[in-house]
Amino acid sequence: MKATKRLELMQDFSRIFGYEPDDALFVFTPARINIIGEHIDYNGGLVMPMAINFGTYAVICKRDDNMARFASVNFSGVITVDLKNIEYDEQHGWANYPKGIIYYMMAEGHSFGGFDVLFSGDIPKGAGGLSSSASIEVVMAMAANSLFGLGYSQIEIALLAQKSENQFCGVNCGIMDQFAVAMGKEGHAIMLNCDSLEYQLLPLNLDGYGIVVMDTKKSRQLNESAYNQRRSECEEALARLQTAFDVQYLADITPEHLDKVGEMLGEGVLLMRARHVISENARVKEAAKLFEKGDVVALGQLLLASHKSLAADYEVSCEELDVIVEAAMAHPACTGARMTGAGFGGCAIAVVRKDDTEDFAKFISEKYATKIGHLPGIYPVQSGQPEIL
Image (tube, rainbow, N blue to C red):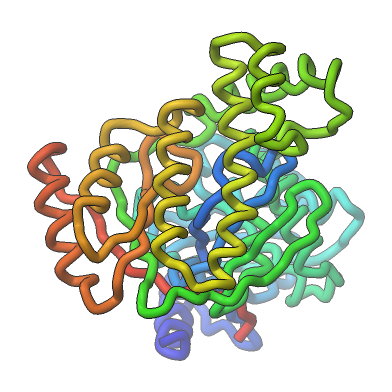
């Protein structure tokens, strides 16, 4: 499949840029889902993302000047930038994500020449929660790193991509998305400590079950959502709790101390946010044990508990996400479901018996359309990993 994609992208490159890309580099980076561990990456917690087989492809070729041209088969037009004068431009839309990568590579002292780069993504358009932004950031970083011999490791690429999204694009995200995209491995999920960056590859042991992405088709813009507000609330809760707990992050507090947390924060938003972070971190630890056992029924129940916490305590769900999770849980082949990603729309995931995936998709589509008024997107996914081909 990737060989076919490479040929198609090379032909598109020639059509868009007007020449055949001799000595071009072809790179793929995956999108990701988060199996469990939501909204705790920036709270120092454990997360369990999985790179998937949808993602972003790029063909890059050197130029003889200091200009960079960005194009995508998914969008019209070519964005031309002078490498000596890279800055965020709202009119450049999607191209700001790869532009930010180049900006910070140069800010870190790397010097390189111009290039033409063409992107192509097969991530379902508008499917929030699959981290298309991290995918294009990492593919740009890997392409430039390899083409110009800059010497970044994959973890350094993940950190660079996070910095770019935080500071260049203005989205105050944690490290999970970029790390999962850069470090994903086929056949595995990742359990990542977002504070230390210690990680463990967990073999996917689902015993005849697979993961299905369910796109609500409700779009959201992450930097326009309540994401930054939630982060600020967590920081305020942490500051209060640090007067009694010797911790650096909210996720350092264990569920055994929730009564004390409640006494200190009182009933209200801060307690709700802290309760989600503390309980969700514990669920990630339990999920790792269930993967080892291959207990997909108990794993599914953890996913459902995660969704309920995100809806009630973190308040980042919505009608569409709740309806699609409820519909998934009504199907006998599904052991569990939850929203994935920042919320406010976007996608949910479900653990579904593989032999029943087609029937599950039909069932969910009918249930969802009846209540919401339009069909969802249903996408069975497999694990993936970044590649330079």
